[in-house]
Amino acid sequence: MKITIEKDVFAEQVAWVLRCVSARATLPALGGLLLEARGEGLRMAGTDLELSGETSAGARVEEPGRAVVPGRVLGEIARSLPQGVVRIEAGASETKISCGSAEFALRLLPVEDIPALQFVSQAPGGTLERALFQTAVGQVTRAASRDEARPVLTGTLVEADAGKLMLVATDSYRLAVREIAWKGPSEPVRRVIPARALQEAARGAEGEGELQVLLGESQAVFAGSGRRLGTRLIEGEFPNWRQLVPGELPNRLRVKRDDFIEAVRRVGILAQSGSPVRVELSAEGVQLAAGTQDIGQASERVEGTYEGEPVTVSFNPQYLLDGVQAVEGNDVVLSVRDGQKPVLIRGADDAGGFTYLAMPIRVGG
Image (tube, rainbow, N blue to C red; front, side, top):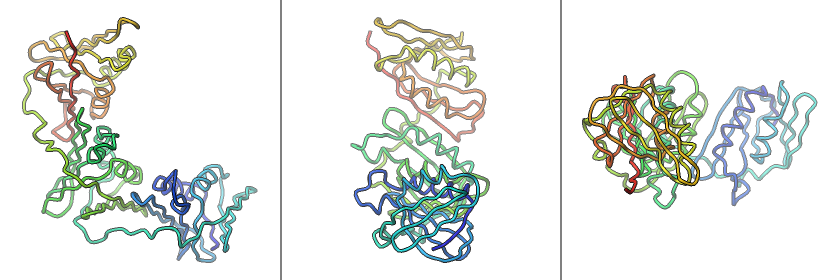
């Protein structure tokens, strides 16, 4: 195999596919990247058996061929190369990589050891705008659990129906829901996709245009702009999230999003060792407070428009921040029934696209 390719293009290919490769592979080949020169381009692929990624880019192919290169080392090399044209020559047991006066020689891994990447092609699917998908994934996956004891909660529920696609995640302490436009079949499809896979698919969906999505029985595939990512689905029954979202709530605060975020950050400095931030909603706006006897106290008032009876609710400050930061627009609306019920967080001008629900912390006394 002999090819030449622009350094920035090569480095971008390596970096993206490398995110699908195991950092602590039990098999050496699972830590490798497959480089395949064919036609007028370079195909690169890798997998950790849960996540598979491949990308293609234009290159000058002098001699077609395939080689498997140690992934992490190749990633470091690709990042460090000087600007210019990268030349890759692979023989039977070694590949040489050069750019400018920099030269590297790497031992190859056996091509036959790397698993064949299989991407589902016949499955319910559709397309959506990449920018919308990226935003929605960023808003929702922050609420997914990191506790492998309940695997289904480490995933994101994807519900596709005629004209819309819902993304839902919860770790049982908070819930995030986003609806986006979808061009797909009218029959409903319901899948649970690992949150990590959605995040990687979103990273690969940069730029304008549409992203193709296939939702198979055991695998989901995201494709566009020469990139394709496949992921295993998570088995199990996702919670009935719709029954968790309350209807109209009587107490509503509208506040400047950025002002509220900065105030929670400042007051949250003294929310140490799991202590909450206390949120007092009233006609004067919102009063934030936190602290412990051992460290000290902090408080700050943020002006806002309030409708309803005075309510005091306590929250994990990071969970509260995650919800408010995910809101689009200048103003955010916090709605609540009482101090023991979840707060509903939405954008003031949002027509229902994004909803975040945060459970309160019950404080004794």
